[in-house]
Length: 459
Ligand code: HEC
Ligand code: HEC
Ligand code: HEC
Ligand code: HEC
Image (cartoon, rainbow, N blue to C red; front, side, top):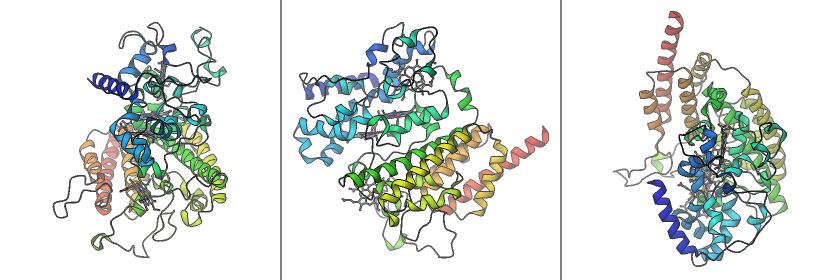
């Protein structure tokens, strides 16, 4: 059904695009999906034979990445593109120019020359989407050799390693967090794109991995699945490293090219600026209230709260993170501190990846931490706490938890239905009740601790 719909959309697009626009031939290290497609290679029937034999068929039928290029002509994309360039709604050339400069680095398997060139994009190129080589690396140098019995992936640098958590995470964050240097491409989800209507990127490695239809043998994932807590912690350290690197690269590029926006608003807590200013909702935080370690001063947003909330041994790095706050928005300083933070978090990710996690101990320390803290004023922080708890309960194989976990998840939702009193719907967490959130999460932790203890005693 999904496939049928996308074929229809695609036929419509061909009608719109015309069949005549073939892209100028450019040298490319990418061999293209057709090279993987025969039925004895990766294009076999789904469900028959080993997973590697139907990787491509699975990707084609079910993977969101197969649709990533096509959707650049759907209604949402048309709205985004024409907000970025008004002339794009009337001109296919102008439209494709925006796609080349702003979109194809993440939504297709593009080369730098394709992003820099002008002229129309070919239908075939867009239709291919985020292909095998976007994740596995350009295949020119290993296409033939990787079929040989004595093939050793470790000897070929252009095939990306993805068996480890680090290898996978670093593959995804190139697009799902962004970067201005990986593969020589600019992949930057900045505030201009978000304000034009693009969803803000909120990557979480365990959830996104689970949401990909596996086109590989899931026995490969045993090491990753051994601890959800560890997978999430490593994933968050990888996110932080990538986000700090991106901030640093934005600063550096702005110094060289003043058209690169500065300060970059998407680097800061969205809801510090996007909040209700009505008197009813306005709260001056009492000055005695314990502040988050990143707090700069009332009214100033902290750096990227989605990535930087309190878990990951952040206190050591507060001085560096503080430098990323906008009131110290000296691009030279941010270029330097972003880079050092990135190196630190990459090391932390590697260290966490080798650690053994005791979920019972984690449960205990989470409870202690939350009990000592004031309620999370920041919605992002609360969302991260929720995800941590979810990982913990999975590791503990907790059976009675899902009900109360749903309650917690519900309290994080935005009020998208119009409120009867004001007829306003909220695309922000203005209604988020942090005291209630804290109460609920502590209640879940307490009951889980009690049952974990009684289990331990009966063992
Ligand atoms: C930094 C990489 C990046 C860039 C640049 C980028 N995108 Fe995206 N885009 C993504 C990712 C990743 C998602 C999926 C977001 C998610 O669900 O987490 C996405 C999602 C979307 C969606 C929503 C798709 C859906 O299924 O609802 C649209 C529409 C879209 N992008 C269009 C565009 C357009 C148009 C441009 C250029 C103006 C663009 N994107 C630039 C990475 C990018
Ligand atoms: C979004 C990223 C992504 C894309 C796109 C992608 N893969 Fe993968 N692929 C993975 C991940 C993650 C794994 C699991 C890790 C590993 O085995 O290295 C994997 C594993 C594989 C494996 C190993 C299977 C096994 O069990 O031995 C094959 C073969 C493979 N992919 C082929 C393909 C082909 C062919 C395509 C294109 C049709 C493709 N992949 C596209 C991420 C991707
Ligand atoms: C070359 C850029 C690129 C890479 C690398 C990449 N993605 Fe994506 N991903 C995208 C884009 C663009 C979209 C939006 C496509 C769509 O909505 O159809 C997307 C969508 C997704 C979605 C669907 C999101 C949703 O809201 O439904 C998941 C899940 C996902 N990616 C997981 C991963 C994982 C896991 C990896 C690493 C193994 C990865 N991606 C690597 C670009 C990329
Ligand atoms: C420092 C303050 C600040 C921060 C931080 C900030 N924004 Fe904005 N945002 C603005 C302003 C000001 C505008 C209006 C810009 C204009 O109209 O030109 C805006 C516009 C927008 C719009 C378009 C709204 C509309 O009605 O047109 C969206 C969507 C948006 N921001 C989302 C976000 C997200 C998501 C984040 C976090 C990743 C974020 N913003 C961070 C100040 C901020």
